[in-house]
Image (cartoon, rainbow, N blue to C red; front, side, top):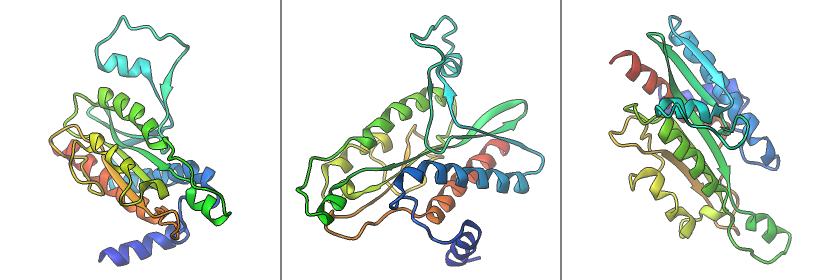
Amino acid sequence: MSDSAKLSETQTKNGGGKGIFNKSALQHERKLQESVVKIKIELESMYPELKFTYRKKLYLREIAEKLGKTSWKPASKDPYVSPDGGLLFVEWNGTEYPVLISEAKKQGSNDARFKKGLDEQSKANAIERAYKNALAFSHYNEKLDYNPYVIFACGCDFDKDSSIIDRLWHLTRMEPMNTNLSLFEEDVTSVYMKGHHYKEEPNFWTVDEIYEIMKEIAVGITNHIIEK
């Protein structure tokens, strides 16, 4: 099936090419989670012999256990990291492996301010908050030979000449963005980015685009795990 045919089929299943960041931007987390759950159902159909589990958060004590820090004690009660799209795991040979961890970050409000006739304001820092999660998942996954963490970024703060873009290169270790790096030989995060000038029409990710990318990552990692 061609890529365009796959996209058309996915649009039908997911209700069309609806933007994940639209006027109801606060719903983006729910829509991302819904897409991950749909991918879980599809994976269960593709691999009926495997068990897939979806979780919304990962506790820091679990990360400490992975690092062998058995004496670690948190300052607060049950601290955790909670990526926008949650975490999808597969069980293989009695061990759970993460196959998809996803974030969706919209940054920039000057496009909306411009339409209202308001002055331009300084850029925000939503994407920088993803670094905290990226570091946590890097620790959790440090013994793996793949990285299931993916970030979808969009908004007018990511205009092609924006310095905000340069803050993302540390996540990819200078590898190209908008590329599936989940099976790359180094510990890198896959960063998918769309940007637009604040005076232009928004160029946001759609549910369908994100769905296809996340499915490719999850299927690729699942195959990588069971074929080793």
